[in-house]
Image 1 (cartoon, rainbow, N blue to C red):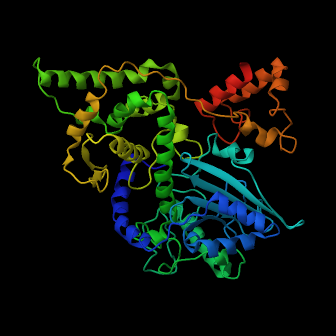
Image 2 (tube, rainbow, N blue to C red):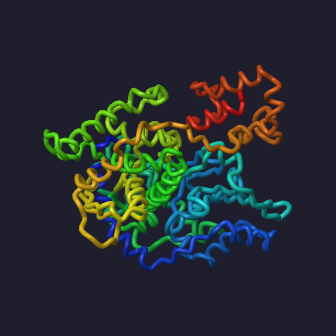
Image 3 (cartoon, helix red, strand yellow):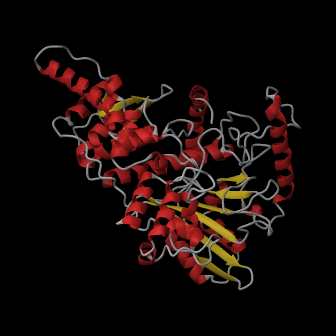
Length: 509
């Protein structure tokens, strides 16, 4: 991670990419492949190979193969190496993402791991695995969200990807740049000695990969854009062309899609109809932006008291709920994150980091809460014509009108805040009902403890058998509650509070 201040500086440069980004996307078709078309292809091609799958993708949606990044190290179920990287192919919008690697000795060599973004019946991520058996020559597609995926990707599922501008394990892991150390035009001095050798190593490893990629049956199907000596990456940091910023492009696409899922989860909460305006006010940081309106007994005095009461309410959030204190999110911005928490969203839902430790998730222009704010604003405006259009200035002074393209006079944020806070008068306290909507909380455990798993068999598919053994129940719960790396379950990640609540109910009720 890098410091907040340095990220602000980086973000200033990122804004300049936006115009060129729009120009590139204007010529692209957005026909992301859907689960249904994949299921039909597998049914019609039961003896297909992985390479034939890539051919099908190229013919069905050529733009898909133009947007990808390469992992030289991997923490996933698929192996990776500098000369045979794991390709993450995400297309123009990241609504369909799939991965493959390049050497038969690597784990997952005959597998395609996939993530679909589904918008109906509600916004959600869906994981699938397509396996090609080299012996039986049989292609097999998994059902949605297999336990092996949820073992790392959480229950409910989400992608795992680091925030701007460091992507450990990826080529271009430092701001998408692979400096060309053989070309003085790009190999600018200034790297610290501790990172110089690592940057050189990355360049020469990538150069070796490039020499053989066109002869490889898989990598040759990727479309490397022309215009950079280290395509699809940049020869220098702060490169102003999104075609050579794949890690950043993926980050921005994921945060935009994931904000829709977060909004869907909040809307499912029983308190959402009452608290939707307060949530938007907190995301807009209204308690800091609304001016005093006077001290009299008239309307101005009432408005001022409203803002005082609201600020007090926000400040009380951090101490009212013990569960919140244990998670440690007390301090700057804790009010909006606590309100999200009361409405059923945790930091483990909010961030896409492998092990989220905080709420912030940065994509180079916006933080996740700003993107969620914009999505919520559009949602509320579509159902309430009285909600003013907002002239919003982001963290870098960018002017944005929300909702986009709606005719009418845009109001200052203070005026919009006043409207929102008035809607929250006399509605009573927030009721946190947990909102733990997890159908099978033990599915993560089944990834390892099944008959064919890599850990001792435990009959998690049979609740009655588990509940007949009180000692086993206590052992399972002790592992779930453990914070020690060698005893906690699952070992790959920390469980969310919703998952723990659902597991506790499954075990003890």
